[in-house]
Image 1 (tube, rainbow, N blue to C red):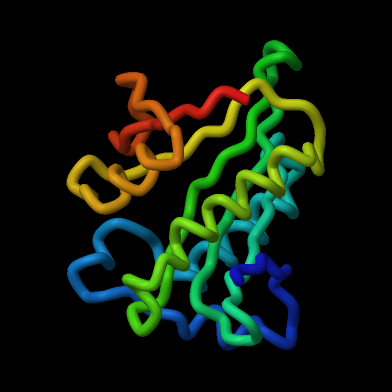
Image 2 (image 1 turned 120 degrees about the vertical axis):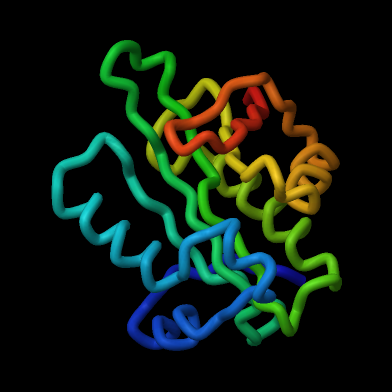
Length: 158
C-alpha cells in the first residue's frame, strides 16, 4: 500500500538521500535541489503553491513526488495542478510503487486541496520512454506542447 506523507524534519534526510539509477539522473533534479527550489518559491509570493510528499510503502520511504497548484494570472478557470517532480529510489523500482504513487497523487489532487482547477499537467523529458509509458497508462494525453525547458507536457483534463 502506497501512502503520500508530508516532508518533515523527521524524514527530510531520508528524502534527500533517495537516489535513482545513474542513467535516470539526467531526467530530474535531485531531491535536495527540488526542496530548496520549493523554499524559494514559497518565500517569494509565487502563484505556484508547492505540494511535496514522500512516498511510503508501509513505513519505508520509497520515493518522492512534488506537485503544485498553479494559479493563472489571466483567468481563474485556467488554474491547474502540476505533477512536476517524481522519483522512486533505485532500490524500490520495478515493484509497481511508481504507478500507485501517481494514482495516489491524482486522488489527492481531485480533492482540490488548494482550489478548483481545469486540469492536471505532468511533464517528462522526451527521451524518458519509461515515464511516457507510465503516464499514458494512467490516462494522460500528450498534446504536443512543451514547457520552457523543451520537456513534453501531458494533460489529464479533470
